Image: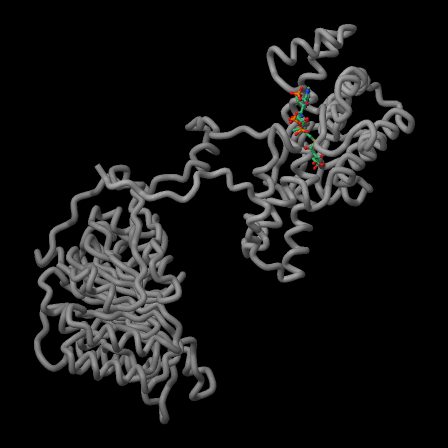
Length: 610
Ligand code: Q5B
């Protein structure tokens, strides 16, 4: 058996991230002793509605966060314990609510810095409601083989080393969290382990005293002895001594008291815990506590170092009396192990995981992104530009200076073409409808397709095909296109024509051909095609998509990357249009009737339904 917590304990944690960490530690213990999750719910208003992920071994559980204790208890009536992990300013109110809640029997608080008057009020409230309030400043409660409340016990391997997977015969009561772990370890090494260990917290006015817990241990037949780790300050140890002396007790009492060093230090000095301070005239000194406990019949070693020996002595006496039987040896290898994370197993070379995706262009696992191996900041420092990053990420090659200049011009020249074109118009309508930037720009983006802007890839593809399969036969190429594809991508424009040439096209062609040494078979072929198509119709010029597509093919960019240049460049323009409309606080657009040809039926009567 155990006191305070057992396999039926179900807890709510009131608090944020620290509470989540505690819940994760508690779930490790649940896994070790093969019990259902202890933590059933969180209460933390800022994260209401969230689900917190907790692993019980390899099993993933989602624990709901509620805005109030009332709501948590409504959904989880099985909760009987509350752990307070919230800041000092709200700890009192949370603990009060928990103590006043019907189903909750035990409230344990880790919060430090709770005002003494509040701690006293909570203690009183607990007594009035016939409940237990443990803490403040308590690391928690551990019932071996049954339940862990809080982070008490430390990491998983420590739980095993302290035999906490099964009950022993020693109860533990400490003020200090750290020493509760130490005491559990000593009970495992020198005895057969613990039934329950309670850290009551080191404040001056703990919610529950030693005597209350001693009474509980006395009534727990499995607890044969209790280890108290006390310290200078307060009267809890003296009260424990009085309790022990008052009548014949079933349990043996071992007590280690910290703070005898006070004897060589200035009087009245305060130690680590808020309550660890000797009173006036040596009241509450470690020495007086030790004497009182010894006089009452407790086994009290001179120093903490003597605690091992004392526990061993009592354990052997209990064995000799037949009060306890030696625990059968447990094969540690049979105890569950926390599942390793995939990364850890991979490191050990024991598993091969097939990657879900493969990347060949960038890597962010170091201090900064590397594009095809080159650190982004180094590219900046060495004077490279956005066009070089494009070369790396889209073509896995660092362009030459001449190639970069061409790419830069392509982007600059196609960044925008006024508000009338499909893409910009789409973004403008969206902006006027109050749509946010990413969605408004996407509205424009959806326009990019075979007729508008999205002909770059296919222009590159088919002109390349022409160069290869119809090198000296442009009419043959055009017939093949008509038969197999339709309009030649990259040829034709809605408003540009031989008489109204597209200056952008002219500029790009001139620049590439006259200012660079790029070999341009694809562009040359397209210009020959243009001669034939414009002879048929004035507007069937090599358009901006076609020109860009051919130049990019000549720059050896992958075919399917080519539309990316129009997409990228035009994103700049569409963002500009969105900002522009917003700057003007533009109003919602509705088409005027005169812009619509209503080619519809005359108004008529709806026939009766048959
Ligand atoms: N015909 C661009 O057409 C447009 C023909 C053709 C043979 C062709 C059309 C087309 C291929 C796709 C393309 C990119 C839809 C254009 C761009 C960016 C922009 C936009 C901006 C910017 C225009 C009339 C007659 C018909 C057709 C024939 C047309 N195209 N024949 N090959 N390629 N091109 N798109 O004027 O005998 O009368 O039946 O699909 O490259 O988007 O500024 O606005 O920067 O924003 O509406 O520059 O050319 O003509 O389709 O009514 O055809 O010409 O067979 O002949 P239109 P349609 P017929 S650049």
